Image (cartoon, rainbow, N blue to C red; front, side):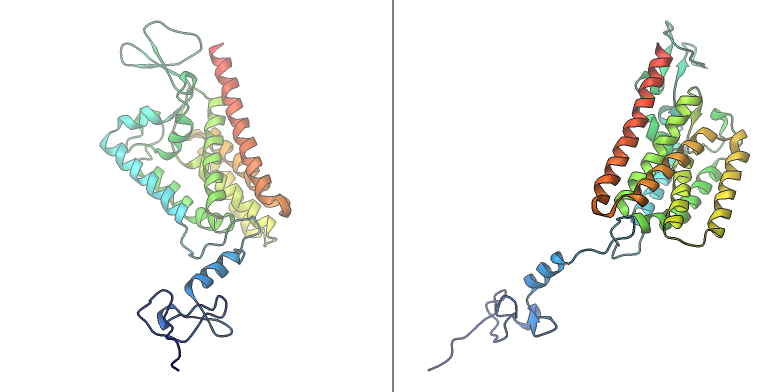
Length: 307
């Protein structure tokens, strides 16, 4: 009596007598995956991979299979693309820069907003409901002449300095936090910088990723401290960061720098010291609460300006 012919469960035309040691389905050489004992089929290998817990950093971020800092690349790409858009259409800067409150006169000139309404004048900025400026300004940079903001003629150097800092800091921070936490940190730091500008200098028009970059600087400090690394080099780095903030106060928005620094520090402290058992929940809640607090500050400031 002849033995029954067995075929691969995925390739019925292939005769085989080898079976998966887990599910016992017959598999051909193309479907065999070596195991400690015998062979596994493709589905059993996938099921086993899903059951293995993914390695995570101290801060809860998933350890990426690839060392490529994808989010950092995307953020740099967005900033560069927006800057190219500015060169083509310079009006983008005035339309989307961080501006708390301003007046556009019927003569086309810009005037200082001091509250209330002015017939014939258009109120612009966050005070007029243009909340998007709180984030869009962080993806814009000074135009080549920089004349519209009365700053030193940084031009292209402005975006080059910020992208260089983003590249150096972003890679390290993204690796430790993971992509989702890193992106939340970046956006909240940018928002925190814009909010402090709105609170202290609402009539100033500001642009640049500096607030977010200062947030990454604070995160870099907290991360190294949490990991117990030698802090001497880190302290020197932070000292240089703070000195630059003081030196640049005369020609950049120190409010945006400080707001980003404080926000980034608070977010990363929440990431670093959240209890392990409820780490993700506590971290997410901290981001939501901080974001809500920033929104509340904007609401209160708007009420004070329009009251």
